Length: 147
Image 1 (cartoon, rainbow, N blue to C red):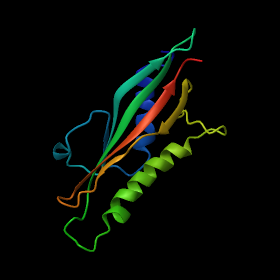
Image 2 (cartoon, helix red, strand yellow):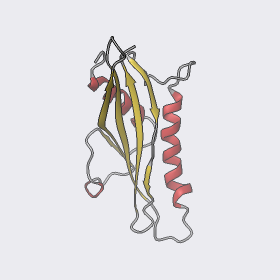
Image 3 (cartoon, rainbow, N blue to C red):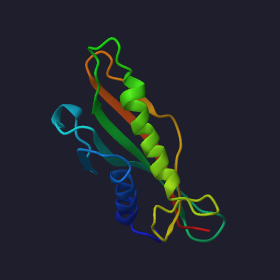
C-alpha cells in the first residue's frame, strides 16, 4: 500500500471530528451505553477490498463505518426527532465530505495519496423513538493506490 493505513484512518477521523459539534470522538468504537458524552462519533475501519489490474500496484478500497450516538427527545410526542436531531447530523457528515472535494470531484480528505473518499452504501438509522438513544451508521469508501 502506497499510503499507510493509519494515515487514511487519521484523515477520515479529522474530517469527521470537524463535521459537527461532537461531545466525544474516537476511532475506538464503544457501546452506546458506555458513552455518556453525546453526540458522539466513531470512525471504524471494517474491511478492505484489494485488487490489481493485469500488472502494477494494488488498488485498495478501505471500507469504514461512521457511527453516531445521540440522545433524542423521545418522550415528547410533538418532538421532530429527525428534523431536530438526526437530519442535521447526517447533513453535517454529508457536508463535511463534500467540502473537501477537488475541482475534478474527488475528495482526498486533505491527504496526498488518497485517490477518493465517498459516502457509499446503505446508512443504518435507529431513531431512538422507543428509548431516546439514536444510532446512525454511515458507510464510507476510501480509495488508495494503484493505477
